[in-house]
Image (cartoon, rainbow, N blue to C red; front, top):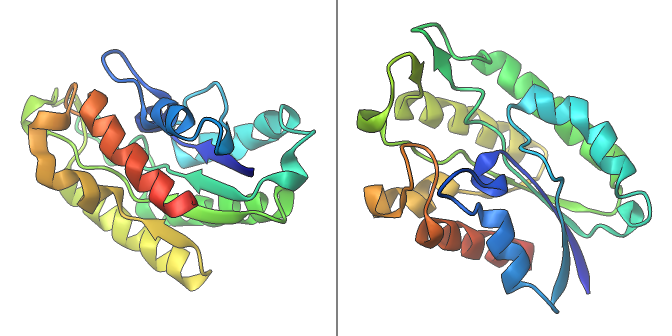
Length: 193
């Protein structure tokens, strides 16, 4: 059986009203693949870099056997608090994506990596003091895709996959309901298998 590691923010992990795509991937692949994921919201890309060390310790017995890593970061990085700039400037976002990528290839030398682009948000439902803009997400996704293409990482375009469904698949302005998580889970399964 294939061994799959899922890394990602609350879109993967879940949030109130949202099961997260990770739970659904695990359920759908039961008996077909072993699915591992940290019991943590991987948040912004620098957080992922920092905590990889901890999460890998929990995988010590299987890390050499991980076949595929499906990873997403971005929603926390584009977050604007109190009208400020995004939490992670775009050049630093790409810098830390490179560092996470390098660490993943070092820690999981036999794994193929899939990077998922950041999902769109429902801006009209947001609080202006805790804001994300789709225009920022699109810029960050473009920069991430350029880097991932340059190192041969497969890109899962979550943004394009989920955008046509609009509010119908959202549980709030950022997260997804069961149907939305299932759509994302199916996109993950298609890439990792």
